[in-house]
Length: 328
Image 1 (cartoon, rainbow, N blue to C red):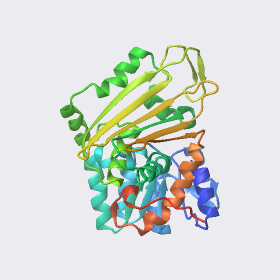
Image 2 (image 1 turned 90 degrees about the vertical axis):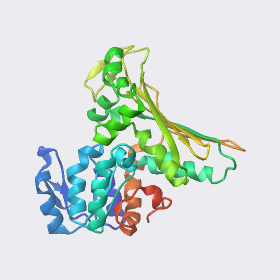
Image 3 (image 1 turned 60 degrees about the vertical axis):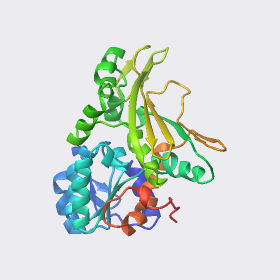
């Protein structure tokens, strides 16, 4: 991800002043004229370079980014991340979100999460909603190939598991009561699907008030064997190729938001899709076929940088930063 992001940032006239990588083989190597540092040197690097913003492109859960975002907030440095949970994190890890938010406010900087979902699961939908009267439901589905994002993401989606293993390790996490789910959320141990953080983003952007959210994860299979280079295995016919996660939110205003993300090892011929319908007095469906999800994510990160720098301090979702704009 960083290869495209830094390329786009440099082409937009930004300056790279430092780089950090978790891969020990890359430490002390050159990256666009700067020497890559180890994570243990991150805070010193911030103090030496005094950047306007840090781009964090590593993991999907906020808890995995606690150290790096805490260091940024403690040192008064803006940060923007592709971490999917960071898109609207207070619904899945409220205590850690508040900790980072408090630090960012104390030190006058802004932390946010963005990426592909900012446009294709967010602003596109709210724009269509802005042209619709009497909305009763917003329904969306988006699919992506877990092969494009590494083994950690593939494993979180249950790819390569037997159906029994999937039920035990993945699906069981949502076969709990609302009270049990809330306890997990409060403890910071809840693992949300990507749409768990998108539904409240949409509600916030549209000034709706959520009254309830539910999440259901189901396994996906294929009739033929599929080779997975990421997993380093053959996913046999009938095994889980990944999962579908459906999040449904209800609102005080009577609008239901139902969003599905489908992450799996693709069979030959399968492609990314983004399919949403806004249902109201008139109903509008739009489908984006074969979006270049990785490059679109990276471009979104770069185009959001001016909004983050101009934002009020704190952990601020992009739902409160206005529409995405092309950065020349």
